[in-house]
Image 1 (cartoon, rainbow, N blue to C red):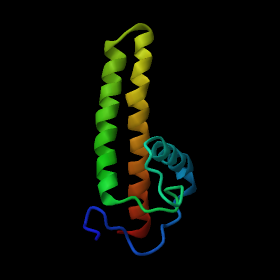
Image 2 (cartoon, rainbow, N blue to C red):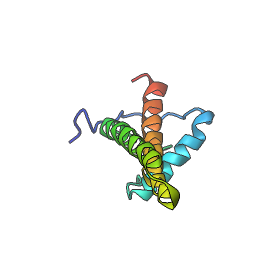
Image 3 (cartoon, rainbow, N blue to C red):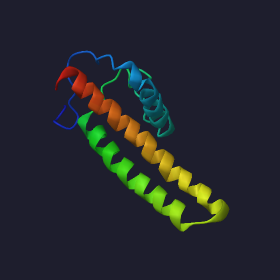
Image 4 (cartoon, rainbow, N blue to C red):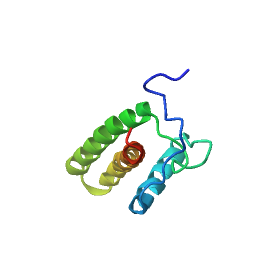
Length: 108
């Protein structure tokens, strides 16, 4: 039973602007890497729930902050480890952007 955090519109997913194609690909890669791939295979054809948008925004901010902190605090080859939170933050941010763009395209 959907609630306000899991409810999605009853209409089809809107077609997003072409300029967002790389963002959708990034979001799809992130969903695949986190074993959360939607049944349709792409967020281009699946609504992003409000809960997922909120979680992605929080994860993106925290991971990017952690990645930047690591990159600045650690030197040498260990600095490469900062790529993990940076890529996580980037992927989560892509999911949030796709979800917000879906809502803006429909006006809801």
